[in-house]
Length: 200
Image (cartoon, rainbow, N blue to C red; front, side, top):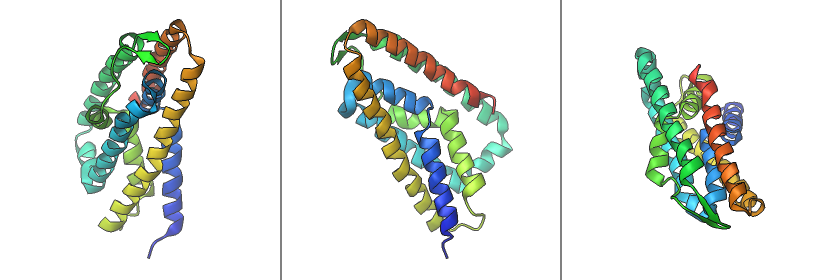
């Protein structure tokens, strides 16, 4: 029998962890400003799909591998931080504003966004916390699968809100100089969003 109190608690965690600022949401906000909603859809779907695969992998026992080899988890965090610095550099200097509605550069694609989840410490922490704190020990495979889908169903609209916020900001950032300053600030915030989870 389903314990709906647990399901509600899991849904609340999924919403809180998905809507709050982090590397994914900072990149989506920036992409919304620079590329618009439609061109950011593959990035958004890549994040959601990649995290769903991660959730299912944790549910299949990947977290036990992390516990057995904690150094591997630390290495993934460092690699993720280095890749994030590269993405921040792209946001700050490769997405050069030309004129309103036009930006040099390309948004992050589906596969790049999906693979990034595996070196994104916040995404890993979200997945591990979801299972260690909320998933019942005796949960069936059906319950695990369905609640992972629930997490994704909650996560995707939260991601879309950040992209929409970016598209609204694009109207305010009408001058190339304003967009350039925004991109540099977003790059710095992207790096800062990663710093706290490096020490967890």
